[in-house]
Length: 195
Image (spheres, rainbow, N blue to C red):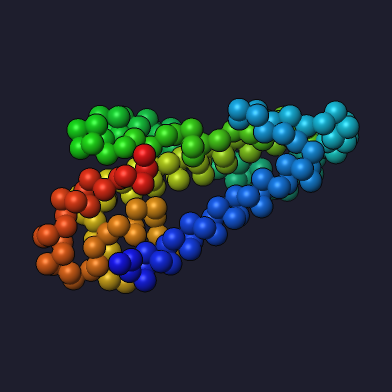
């Protein structure tokens, strides 16, 4: 019999799917087609977008002093992000097969598609790519960590946590020593929902 937590998590999954469907309806509203990760706009939309793009000189002229001062600090973060990407990917490709944990598909998390938006100038496209990479990488790392936690320590927290990761539903209640001892092996290998 499903627990109340299972029922709520199933409702969340249904709502997430509804959200994805609503987002996909925007394809019709903004006249684009998504085909194999490539986006195609109607010709008239491309023309309109190009007219809306801010020229690079105007873009820099409109930049505030705080934006210019903060720029090196923002871009400095690319170094630890790349190192994290390489190390977490190496970890996953080395360790996950040893424990029969399904690998996380990096392409499901790190998505570059803003380069198809003709209303962005070259600088804006680079900035968008950076943010797409950083946020996608954090989500990718979070999923790898969630699967790792499910294998090594699938115990819920006693206190309230801000965000539940994708594997949390499968974890054992905090303080339930009996279930932990009885179910740990099963939970460690319960990745059927990812197949």
